[in-house]
Amino acid sequence: MPSSQLLILGNGFDLHCGLKSSYKDFFQSSILDNIGVQYGLRQKKAEAIGFWENLLNEYYKKFGNDNYRWCDIETIIKDTVLTIEEIAFNAIKSVRQGESLEVIKTIKEFLYKICMSFYFSLLQRNICSDDEACSLLINHILQELNKFERRFCKYIKDNIVNPKNENEFNTQYIVNAMNLLKTLTGFTDIQFETIDDIIKRQEKAYDKPLSPTMCQSDWREKRILSHEFANLRSVNILSFNYTALFDILGVDSPCLYNNVHGKLCLNKCSRDCTSCNIIFGIDDSIIQSHEKNFELHKFSKTYRKMLNTNAETCILPKKNNRLIEIKFYGHSLSEADYSYFQSIFDYYNIYENNKVSLIFYYSKGFEQTDEVYRLINTYGKTLINKEQGKNLTHKLLLENRLKIVEIP
Image (tube, rainbow, N blue to C red; front, side):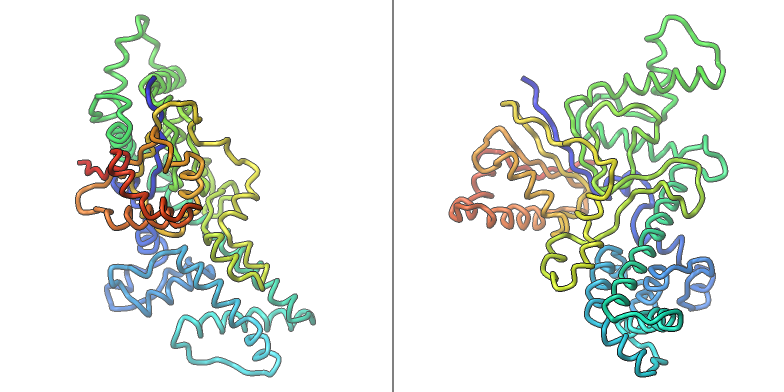
Protein backbone atom coordinates (compact mmCIF):
# COMPACT_ATOMS: atom_id res chain seq x y z
CA MET A 1 0.00 0.00 0.00
CA PRO A 2 1.55 3.37 -1.03
CA SER A 3 2.22 6.00 1.60
CA SER A 4 0.23 9.18 2.14
CA GLN A 5 1.96 12.52 2.47
CA LEU A 6 1.08 15.62 4.46
CA LEU A 7 3.24 18.45 3.14
CA ILE A 8 3.47 21.51 5.41
CA LEU A 9 4.77 24.61 3.63
CA GLY A 10 5.97 27.94 5.00
CA ASN A 11 7.02 31.18 3.32
CA GLY A 12 10.45 29.71 2.63
CA PHE A 13 8.79 27.80 -0.22
CA ASP A 14 7.73 30.95 -2.07
CA LEU A 15 11.01 32.72 -1.28
CA HIS A 16 13.01 29.75 -2.63
CA CYS A 17 10.94 29.98 -5.83
CA GLY A 18 11.89 33.63 -6.32
CA LEU A 19 8.72 35.31 -5.05
CA LYS A 20 9.39 38.45 -3.01
CA SER A 21 6.85 37.48 -0.36
CA SER A 22 8.59 38.40 2.89
CA TYR A 23 7.38 41.19 5.16
CA LYS A 24 10.69 42.92 4.49
CA ASP A 25 10.04 42.84 0.72
CA PHE A 26 6.56 44.25 1.25
CA PHE A 27 7.85 47.03 3.50
CA GLN A 28 10.62 48.03 1.11
CA SER A 29 8.37 47.97 -1.94
CA SER A 30 5.04 49.31 -0.68
CA ILE A 31 5.79 51.45 2.37
CA LEU A 32 9.38 52.70 2.36
CA ASP A 33 10.11 55.85 0.36
CA ASN A 34 13.14 54.54 -1.52
CA ILE A 35 13.85 57.97 -3.00
CA GLY A 36 14.11 59.39 0.51
CA VAL A 37 16.50 56.59 1.49
CA GLN A 38 18.99 57.88 -1.07
CA TYR A 39 19.13 61.13 0.92
CA GLY A 40 19.31 59.46 4.32
CA LEU A 41 15.62 59.98 5.09
CA ARG A 42 13.65 57.33 6.94
CA GLN A 43 10.17 58.04 5.70
CA LYS A 44 7.26 56.25 4.11
CA LYS A 45 5.58 56.75 0.77
CA ALA A 46 2.90 59.42 0.68
CA GLU A 47 0.21 56.88 -0.26
CA ALA A 48 1.08 54.55 2.66
CA ILE A 49 -1.38 56.20 5.02
CA GLY A 50 -2.81 53.43 7.21
CA PHE A 51 -2.23 52.87 10.92
CA TRP A 52 -0.02 49.81 10.36
CA GLU A 53 2.04 51.50 7.64
CA ASN A 54 2.69 54.41 9.99
CA LEU A 55 3.62 52.01 12.77
CA LEU A 56 6.04 50.04 10.57
CA ASN A 57 7.68 53.28 9.58
CA GLU A 58 8.16 54.12 13.27
CA TYR A 59 9.92 50.78 13.70
CA TYR A 60 12.07 51.57 10.68
CA LYS A 61 13.01 55.00 12.07
CA LYS A 62 13.99 53.35 15.34
CA PHE A 63 15.76 50.20 14.11
CA GLY A 64 16.69 51.01 10.52
CA ASN A 65 17.77 48.29 8.11
CA ASP A 66 19.62 46.11 10.61
CA ASN A 67 18.77 43.03 8.53
CA TYR A 68 15.16 44.02 9.11
CA ARG A 69 14.95 41.61 12.05
CA TRP A 70 12.24 43.85 13.44
CA CYS A 71 10.10 43.50 10.30
CA ASP A 72 7.90 40.62 11.44
CA ILE A 73 4.37 41.89 11.06
CA GLU A 74 2.74 39.31 13.29
CA THR A 75 5.19 39.95 16.13
CA ILE A 76 4.50 43.66 15.73
CA ILE A 77 0.74 42.97 15.87
CA LYS A 78 1.21 41.01 19.08
CA ASP A 79 3.37 43.69 20.71
CA THR A 80 1.02 46.45 19.54
CA VAL A 81 -2.17 44.83 20.80
CA LEU A 82 -0.65 44.00 24.19
CA THR A 83 0.79 47.52 24.51
CA ILE A 84 -2.56 49.10 23.67
CA GLU A 85 -4.19 46.91 26.30
CA GLU A 86 -1.68 48.29 28.80
CA ILE A 87 -1.95 52.00 27.91
CA ALA A 88 -5.53 52.40 26.68
CA PHE A 89 -7.18 53.63 29.87
CA ASN A 90 -4.27 55.92 30.77
CA ALA A 91 -4.55 57.49 27.31
CA ILE A 92 -8.25 58.19 27.90
CA LYS A 93 -7.38 59.76 31.24
CA SER A 94 -4.78 61.97 29.56
CA VAL A 95 -7.34 63.17 27.00
CA ARG A 96 -9.96 63.91 29.65
CA GLN A 97 -7.37 65.92 31.61
CA GLY A 98 -6.35 67.92 28.54
CA GLU A 99 -2.80 66.58 28.44
CA SER A 100 -0.74 66.36 25.24
CA LEU A 101 2.24 64.36 24.00
CA GLU A 102 4.45 66.41 21.70
CA VAL A 103 7.76 64.52 21.56
CA ILE A 104 7.69 60.91 20.34
CA LYS A 105 10.82 58.93 21.23
CA THR A 106 9.59 55.35 21.55
CA ILE A 107 7.13 53.00 19.85
CA LYS A 108 5.07 52.99 23.03
CA GLU A 109 4.83 56.79 22.99
CA PHE A 110 3.79 56.66 19.33
CA LEU A 111 0.97 54.24 20.21
CA TYR A 112 0.02 56.37 23.20
CA LYS A 113 -0.40 59.39 20.93
CA ILE A 114 -2.44 57.36 18.43
CA CYS A 115 -4.76 56.29 21.25
CA MET A 116 -5.08 59.86 22.48
CA SER A 117 -5.90 61.17 18.99
CA PHE A 118 -8.57 58.53 18.52
CA TYR A 119 -10.14 59.19 21.91
CA PHE A 120 -10.04 62.94 21.34
CA SER A 121 -12.03 62.55 18.10
CA LEU A 122 -14.54 60.35 19.94
CA LEU A 123 -15.05 62.81 22.76
CA GLN A 124 -15.53 65.65 20.29
CA ARG A 125 -18.39 63.78 18.61
CA ASN A 126 -19.99 62.08 21.55
CA ILE A 127 -19.61 61.31 25.23
CA CYS A 128 -18.97 57.63 25.85
CA SER A 129 -17.70 55.57 28.73
CA ASP A 130 -14.06 54.53 29.00
CA ASP A 131 -14.98 50.90 28.29
CA GLU A 132 -16.91 51.88 25.16
CA ALA A 133 -14.01 54.04 23.99
CA CYS A 134 -11.54 51.15 24.42
CA SER A 135 -13.85 48.80 22.53
CA LEU A 136 -14.16 51.28 19.66
CA LEU A 137 -10.37 51.68 19.57
CA ILE A 138 -9.83 47.92 19.31
CA ASN A 139 -12.37 47.69 16.49
CA HIS A 140 -10.69 50.61 14.71
CA ILE A 141 -7.26 48.95 14.92
CA LEU A 142 -8.79 45.70 13.63
CA GLN A 143 -10.42 47.48 10.68
CA GLU A 144 -7.06 49.05 9.88
CA LEU A 145 -5.54 45.56 9.99
CA ASN A 146 -8.15 44.32 7.49
CA LYS A 147 -7.16 47.11 5.09
CA PHE A 148 -3.48 46.34 5.63
CA GLU A 149 -4.06 42.66 4.82
CA ARG A 150 -5.80 43.61 1.58
CA ARG A 151 -2.88 45.80 0.55
CA PHE A 152 -0.45 42.97 1.31
CA CYS A 153 -2.63 40.65 -0.78
CA LYS A 154 -2.48 43.11 -3.69
CA TYR A 155 1.32 43.35 -3.34
CA ILE A 156 1.80 39.56 -3.54
CA LYS A 157 -0.64 39.24 -6.41
CA ASP A 158 1.21 41.94 -8.37
CA ASN A 159 4.38 39.87 -8.02
CA ILE A 160 2.61 36.91 -9.65
CA VAL A 161 0.22 38.53 -12.12
CA ASN A 162 1.15 41.60 -14.15
CA PRO A 163 -1.27 44.29 -12.87
CA LYS A 164 -1.26 45.87 -16.35
CA ASN A 165 -2.04 42.56 -18.09
CA GLU A 166 -4.05 39.97 -16.16
CA ASN A 167 -3.05 37.27 -18.68
CA GLU A 168 0.68 37.70 -18.02
CA PHE A 169 2.07 35.62 -15.15
CA ASN A 170 5.39 35.29 -13.37
CA THR A 171 6.15 32.04 -15.15
CA GLN A 172 9.57 31.62 -13.55
CA TYR A 173 7.96 31.49 -10.10
CA ILE A 174 5.42 28.95 -11.36
CA VAL A 175 8.07 26.69 -12.91
CA ASN A 176 10.26 26.96 -9.79
CA ALA A 177 7.27 26.06 -7.61
CA MET A 178 6.48 23.02 -9.75
CA ASN A 179 10.08 21.82 -9.55
CA LEU A 180 10.28 22.32 -5.79
CA LEU A 181 6.96 20.53 -5.33
CA LYS A 182 8.38 17.69 -7.42
CA THR A 183 11.47 17.50 -5.18
CA LEU A 184 9.40 17.45 -1.99
CA THR A 185 6.73 14.98 -3.09
CA GLY A 186 8.22 12.98 -5.97
CA PHE A 187 5.04 13.41 -8.06
CA THR A 188 7.13 13.29 -11.26
CA ASP A 189 10.72 12.67 -12.34
CA ILE A 190 10.70 15.49 -14.90
CA GLN A 191 12.72 18.67 -14.35
CA PHE A 192 10.60 21.49 -15.71
CA GLU A 193 12.26 24.30 -17.67
CA THR A 194 9.27 26.29 -18.90
CA ILE A 195 5.52 25.80 -18.94
CA ASP A 196 5.72 25.59 -22.74
CA ASP A 197 8.00 22.55 -22.38
CA ILE A 198 5.27 20.79 -20.42
CA ILE A 199 2.66 21.62 -23.05
CA LYS A 200 4.86 20.44 -25.95
CA ARG A 201 5.85 17.24 -24.15
CA GLN A 202 2.30 16.31 -23.28
CA GLU A 203 0.67 17.39 -26.56
CA LYS A 204 1.84 14.12 -28.07
CA ALA A 205 -0.79 12.42 -25.92
CA TYR A 206 -3.52 14.06 -28.03
CA ASP A 207 -4.15 12.60 -31.48
CA LYS A 208 -6.29 15.42 -32.79
CA PRO A 209 -4.76 18.92 -32.67
CA LEU A 210 -7.05 21.75 -31.64
CA SER A 211 -7.44 24.99 -33.54
CA PRO A 212 -5.24 27.64 -31.91
CA THR A 213 -8.02 29.95 -30.70
CA MET A 214 -7.42 31.54 -27.31
CA CYS A 215 -10.30 29.70 -25.62
CA GLN A 216 -9.41 26.24 -26.93
CA SER A 217 -5.69 26.81 -26.42
CA ASP A 218 -6.32 27.80 -22.82
CA TRP A 219 -8.56 24.77 -22.33
CA ARG A 220 -5.91 22.46 -23.81
CA GLU A 221 -3.15 23.83 -21.57
CA LYS A 222 -5.26 23.50 -18.43
CA ARG A 223 -6.13 19.90 -19.29
CA ILE A 224 -2.48 19.07 -19.91
CA LEU A 225 -1.39 20.70 -16.64
CA SER A 226 -4.11 18.81 -14.75
CA HIS A 227 -2.77 15.57 -16.22
CA GLU A 228 0.76 16.54 -15.16
CA PHE A 229 -0.30 16.90 -11.52
CA ALA A 230 -2.35 13.69 -11.36
CA ASN A 231 0.23 11.88 -9.21
CA LEU A 232 -0.28 14.40 -6.41
CA ARG A 233 -3.53 12.70 -5.39
CA SER A 234 -1.85 10.94 -2.47
CA VAL A 235 -0.49 14.26 -1.15
CA ASN A 236 -2.31 16.65 1.17
CA ILE A 237 -0.85 20.16 1.39
CA LEU A 238 -1.15 22.43 4.41
CA SER A 239 0.25 25.81 3.43
CA PHE A 240 1.02 28.72 5.73
CA ASN A 241 1.52 30.85 2.60
CA TYR A 242 -1.09 32.96 0.85
CA THR A 243 -0.34 31.50 -2.58
CA ALA A 244 -2.03 28.48 -4.16
CA LEU A 245 -0.19 27.17 -7.22
CA PHE A 246 -3.19 25.43 -8.76
CA ASP A 247 -5.35 28.56 -8.50
CA ILE A 248 -2.62 30.54 -10.24
CA LEU A 249 -2.47 27.96 -13.04
CA GLY A 250 -6.26 27.94 -13.28
CA VAL A 251 -6.57 24.17 -12.82
CA ASP A 252 -8.50 22.10 -10.31
CA SER A 253 -6.34 21.04 -7.39
CA PRO A 254 -5.47 17.33 -7.73
CA CYS A 255 -5.07 17.06 -3.96
CA LEU A 256 -6.49 18.49 -0.76
CA TYR A 257 -4.84 21.90 -0.42
CA ASN A 258 -5.50 24.20 2.53
CA ASN A 259 -4.16 27.72 3.00
CA VAL A 260 -4.18 27.95 6.80
CA HIS A 261 -4.38 31.73 6.98
CA GLY A 262 -6.31 32.45 3.80
CA LYS A 263 -5.16 32.90 0.23
CA LEU A 264 -4.77 35.51 -2.46
CA CYS A 265 -7.73 36.86 -4.32
CA LEU A 266 -6.84 36.49 -7.99
CA ASN A 267 -9.75 38.63 -9.17
CA LYS A 268 -9.03 41.81 -11.05
CA CYS A 269 -9.46 44.24 -8.21
CA SER A 270 -8.14 47.42 -6.71
CA ARG A 271 -5.64 48.13 -3.95
CA ASP A 272 -8.36 47.70 -1.30
CA CYS A 273 -9.84 44.48 -2.69
CA THR A 274 -12.73 43.27 -0.53
CA SER A 275 -12.50 39.62 -1.66
CA CYS A 276 -9.23 39.03 0.20
CA ASN A 277 -9.41 36.60 3.12
CA ILE A 278 -5.77 36.45 4.24
CA ILE A 279 -5.20 36.63 7.98
CA PHE A 280 -2.52 38.31 10.06
CA GLY A 281 -2.91 37.64 13.75
CA ILE A 282 -1.72 36.36 17.10
CA ASP A 283 -1.45 32.81 18.39
CA ASP A 284 -4.47 31.96 20.52
CA SER A 285 -2.36 30.98 23.55
CA ILE A 286 -1.12 34.59 23.88
CA ILE A 287 -4.67 35.93 23.88
CA GLN A 288 -5.82 33.37 26.43
CA SER A 289 -3.20 34.59 28.89
CA HIS A 290 -4.76 38.07 28.75
CA GLU A 291 -8.39 37.18 29.42
CA LYS A 292 -9.10 40.37 31.34
CA ASN A 293 -9.75 42.14 28.05
CA PHE A 294 -11.95 39.88 25.95
CA GLU A 295 -11.76 42.30 23.00
CA LEU A 296 -8.22 41.09 22.24
CA HIS A 297 -9.56 37.75 21.03
CA LYS A 298 -10.51 39.53 17.80
CA PHE A 299 -6.82 39.49 16.83
CA SER A 300 -6.47 35.74 17.39
CA LYS A 301 -5.75 33.71 14.25
CA THR A 302 -8.04 30.97 15.55
CA TYR A 303 -10.94 33.36 16.13
CA ARG A 304 -10.51 35.08 12.78
CA LYS A 305 -10.27 31.77 10.93
CA MET A 306 -13.46 30.68 12.69
CA LEU A 307 -15.22 33.69 11.14
CA ASN A 308 -14.21 32.54 7.67
CA THR A 309 -17.30 30.84 6.25
CA ASN A 310 -15.22 29.32 3.44
CA ALA A 311 -13.37 26.96 5.78
CA GLU A 312 -11.89 23.97 3.97
CA THR A 313 -12.49 20.30 4.72
CA CYS A 314 -10.13 18.32 6.96
CA ILE A 315 -6.69 18.38 5.38
CA LEU A 316 -5.15 15.50 7.34
CA PRO A 317 -4.66 12.16 5.54
CA LYS A 318 -6.89 9.45 6.96
CA LYS A 319 -5.53 7.00 9.51
CA ASN A 320 -6.18 3.85 7.47
CA ASN A 321 -3.13 1.76 8.33
CA ARG A 322 -1.08 3.43 5.59
CA LEU A 323 2.42 4.77 6.03
CA ILE A 324 2.14 8.52 6.54
CA GLU A 325 4.97 10.96 5.88
CA ILE A 326 4.59 14.39 7.46
CA LYS A 327 6.92 16.68 5.54
CA PHE A 328 7.97 20.24 6.36
CA TYR A 329 9.60 22.82 4.14
CA GLY A 330 10.10 26.55 4.42
CA HIS A 331 8.40 26.95 7.78
CA SER A 332 10.26 28.72 10.58
CA LEU A 333 8.85 26.19 13.09
CA SER A 334 8.21 29.13 15.40
CA GLU A 335 6.16 28.81 18.56
CA ALA A 336 3.41 30.90 16.96
CA ASP A 337 2.25 27.80 15.06
CA TYR A 338 2.99 25.11 17.65
CA SER A 339 -0.73 24.70 18.28
CA TYR A 340 -1.20 23.46 14.70
CA PHE A 341 1.69 21.00 14.94
CA GLN A 342 0.55 19.72 18.34
CA SER A 343 -2.91 18.99 16.93
CA ILE A 344 -1.38 17.07 14.01
CA PHE A 345 0.99 15.09 16.23
CA ASP A 346 -1.86 14.29 18.62
CA TYR A 347 -4.11 13.18 15.77
CA TYR A 348 -1.55 10.65 14.55
CA ASN A 349 -0.26 9.72 18.02
CA ILE A 350 3.32 9.99 16.77
CA TYR A 351 4.82 8.39 19.89
CA GLU A 352 3.10 5.03 19.45
CA ASN A 353 2.17 5.02 15.77
CA ASN A 354 5.24 3.68 13.99
CA LYS A 355 3.60 4.18 10.60
CA VAL A 356 4.08 7.93 10.91
CA SER A 357 7.40 9.59 10.09
CA LEU A 358 8.54 13.22 10.16
CA ILE A 359 10.78 14.65 7.43
CA PHE A 360 12.13 18.20 7.70
CA TYR A 361 13.53 19.50 4.41
CA TYR A 362 15.77 22.54 4.20
CA SER A 363 17.86 24.34 1.59
CA LYS A 364 21.58 24.93 2.06
CA GLY A 365 22.24 27.73 4.52
CA PHE A 366 18.85 27.33 6.20
CA GLU A 367 19.50 24.38 8.50
CA GLN A 368 16.88 23.94 11.23
CA THR A 369 18.29 21.26 13.50
CA ASP A 370 17.83 23.38 16.63
CA GLU A 371 14.28 24.34 15.65
CA VAL A 372 13.34 20.71 14.95
CA TYR A 373 14.82 19.58 18.26
CA ARG A 374 12.94 22.34 20.10
CA LEU A 375 9.64 21.51 18.37
CA ILE A 376 9.79 17.78 19.16
CA ASN A 377 10.87 18.34 22.75
CA THR A 378 8.23 21.00 23.34
CA TYR A 379 5.60 18.62 22.00
CA GLY A 380 6.98 15.84 24.20
CA LYS A 381 6.21 17.95 27.27
CA THR A 382 2.50 17.87 26.37
CA LEU A 383 2.29 14.06 26.58
CA ILE A 384 0.53 12.62 29.63
CA ASN A 385 3.39 10.18 30.18
CA LYS A 386 6.26 12.59 30.90
CA GLU A 387 8.91 9.89 30.58
CA GLN A 388 7.70 9.10 27.08
CA GLY A 389 7.78 12.82 26.32
CA LYS A 390 11.42 13.08 27.35
CA ASN A 391 12.21 10.08 25.18
CA LEU A 392 10.25 11.13 22.08
CA THR A 393 13.11 12.49 19.95
CA HIS A 394 15.32 9.50 20.72
CA LYS A 395 12.50 7.06 19.90
CA LEU A 396 11.75 8.71 16.56
CA LEU A 397 15.43 8.64 15.59
CA LEU A 398 15.85 5.03 16.70
CA GLU A 399 12.89 3.95 14.59
CA ASN A 400 14.10 6.02 11.61
CA ARG A 401 10.96 8.14 11.80
CA LEU A 402 12.69 11.51 12.11
CA LYS A 403 14.83 12.85 9.28
CA ILE A 404 16.35 16.23 8.45
CA VAL A 405 17.13 16.37 4.74
CA GLU A 406 18.94 18.99 2.65
CA ILE A 407 17.60 19.61 -0.85
CA PRO A 408 19.20 21.54 -3.75
